[in-house]
Image 1: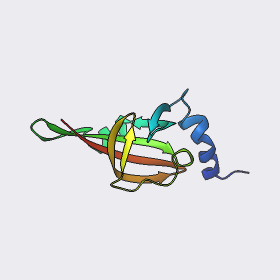
Image 2: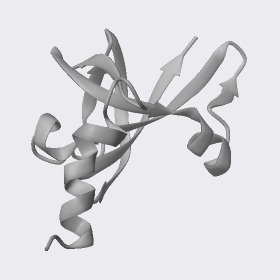
Image 3: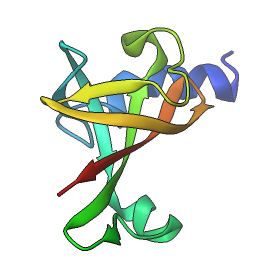
Length: 108
């Protein structure tokens, strides 16, 4: 009999990160992988775009990705490239075999 945590880990690829369900294919640091980009959670946590000064704003993005696909947990402050755009990791948590990675980028 499987534990709840084992069942969650099994569901990562078959449900949560399944492109037929919630997942989308993106290129993360040059490697194609299935992730979830969550704008609804960011709306709960605060604005997705924050105006910093005239003509400059900060874009925020929350990415869910499999621990297994991504590799070692990204360090806060690390630069990460998502679909050709550079972001800085501002927060990371591991939730049942998936990383929830908060990303920020300054844009003009």
